[in-house]
Length: 150
Image (spheres, rainbow, N blue to C red):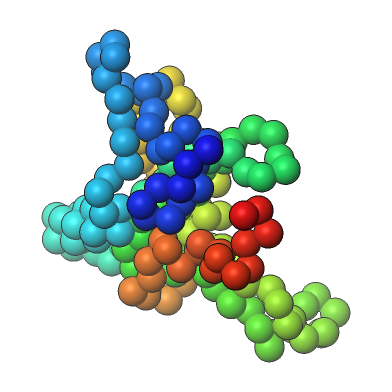
C-alpha cells in the first residue's frame, strides 16, 4: 500500500498494467487529474456547445472491504460532495451528517457499465442534477486527523 503524492491511498501505488496496450507498459495516474478533467470538459463543451461535468476515475480497493470500486480522482464542474445538512429525510427528520460523495458515486456507477475488457473508457450520464462547482478530487480525501487507518 502507498500514499500517492496526490493524497490517494492505493494498494498498488497507483500503477496499473491492465489495459495497457503493450506488454510491460505501465499506466500511472495523470499528473494533475483535476486539470486533465477540466481540459477535457472545456474541449467537449466547446465542440458540442453544451454544459458538462467530467469525473476521471480509477479503481481502488477499500479498507475492510473485498473487491474494488471506481472512485473519483479528477473533477471538472462536478461537486465532490453534496452536503444535505439541514434537509429532511423521508420522515421529515433533519439530516445532520449526510453528505453523499457525489463524484465517487458517479465513478462507482460507471464501473457497473464499463467493462474492463471493453476498451471504452467513457460513460455518459444524462438526467442528473447538480450545481456546477470548482470542486477538486482532494475534497473527498479524509483529513489526516480523522483518518482511522493511519
